[in-house]
Image 1 (cartoon, rainbow, N blue to C red):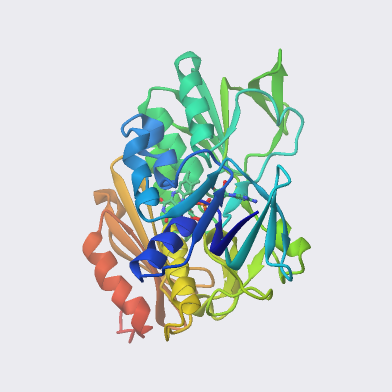
Image 2 (cartoon, helix red, strand yellow):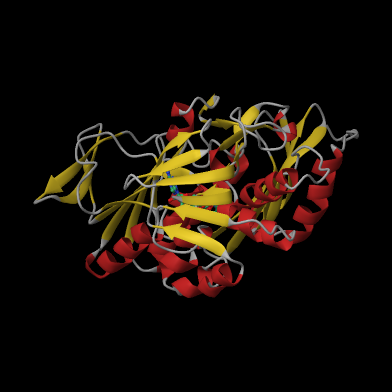
Amino acid sequence: MSNFDLLIVGAGHAGAQAAITLRQMKFEGSIGMIGDEPEVPYQRPPLSKEYLAGDKEFERILIRPASFWQERDVDMLLGKRVVAVDAAGHEVTLCDGAKVRYGKLIWAAGGTPRLLTCAGAEANGVYAVRRRSDVDAMMAALPSVENVVIIGGGYIGLEAAAVMSKLGKRVTLLEALDRVLARVAGPELSAFYEAEHRAHGVDLRTGARMDSIEVSDGRATGVRMADGSVVPADMVIVGIGIIAEVEPLIAAGAAGSNGLDVDGYCRTSLPDVYAVGDCAAHENKFAEGRRIRLESVQNANDQAKLAVQHILGETVAEYEAIPWFWSNQYDLKLQTVGLSTGHDQTVLRGDPETRSFSVVYFRDDRVIALDCVNAVNDYVQGRALVIAGARLIWGDAR
Ligand code: FAD
């Protein structure tokens, strides 16, 4: 039976960062990394951007070249899924029944795309955008695709819409709520992106209630709406969020539901088990102490570093890295910092007409977040204001 001093489950952003940090900090014990995808860790953000557009080869989105892991003596067990964890016995079980023992376990299993539950959801031609294999399958199908329907107006749906329209496809984007990005941004930003996509020819529909996927010979041919109309589709891309990959640990008794509950050092409630990245639910200072999961590369990297420092006995402060995120659509670079949820006031800096502006979010007169579109300076300065919790003294203008 394999036995590792440090076992990482999940060969994605957080898992890779944990292994990198361990070796950077001169950890001399054995490291194993189990991942259910066949690839060594790669960057996920390009999957809905440059990689989907065909502008970047897969090798260029690897987090480290394949040789790196061998040179650093990180044992990769790829194409294998952990199905059970025995926390008391310090042992995990793989899908093929093999057991792997560990001294400490870092759970970095990310999330799996939320699927449609309607009729036709499993037809050929319906895709999620989470893994390289999803995007490779989409790219292989693209030459015979004319009409693309995207379900979900979050970042991934919007990025996919931008790529598909750049590739010359006829794109319809269906968002069930009354605006895109409703979960993560204020109405000003939503309105701006809706206008941009429409200007690029995307048929963007908000308040759009779909009923089912139309299927012929096992292939998706359209999306039937609640009013009975059908939007033709040769390809349906579903971007409606993820479900945290946590079942084996929850079954083993770990606290959590939507993510594994972790403390300020990313420890779960199970002994010697840490959780980091998209699957970890932590109490976040920038969300007024509420327990949240963040789905961003920044969070995956920062939590992985912190967990490793804690495991190695470093004196570290509890996790309170400021959340930040980016999204590229057309020639627009959005950078966000802080969490805008719960804001009670916004100020628009610059003019959306110029395609360079920022939305500044306030709660109780304090700057809590910024969304900056093609406005790097605002992002840099705004970040400092959010970290400082800067309070705005309103002048007579209000
Ligand atoms: P992941 O990177 O998902 O890695 C988890 C790995 O664990 C996966 O390989 C998974 O298959 C594997 N796994 C799951 N369960 C098991 C198991 N039981 N056994 C073994 N292996 C398992 N973030 C940004 O900050 N900016 C962006 O612009 C951005 N764009 C994105 C675009 C797309 C298309 C996607 C999908 C995500 C994007 N994100 C972006 C989010 C970012 O990629 C994630 O937050 C980040 O990948 C989280 O890292 P992670 O290590 O927690 O999870």
